[in-house]
Image (tube, rainbow, N blue to C red; front, side):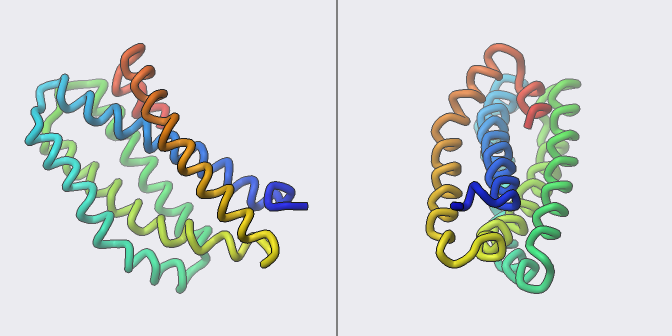
Length: 172
């Protein structure tokens, strides 16, 4: 049958594809928004640090959460938080200049949610697939991540150039 023959894995793979593509759109749009709408390189660096520090700090907590609760639940809750934060970011980008006071809290929520999300996303595959399909499932999951890391920034650049960073955030 293979991993894609199982609906639960197909849902995971499709969600991973859409989510990773959205993350790539976000990364291009964020840099463009900050640098072209009143912020400078220092502002961009501070916002990226506000994302990266909680993301890294909460990886261990995310691992504990995925062991304690159902990984699906952790993934859904953290994606809901990420969706809310990106929605606020899209509205912020559509209504004004890039200001640290608005961007830093959004970046903290996005980074924290990502840090909590990632361990669950790694532990879910064994729960979805039998042992003989896990290697294929891991390869497909990794391939999706690699493909979106290549194609996502290209799509993000085209989208931001054709529309706006706010549009890219809204699509994310």
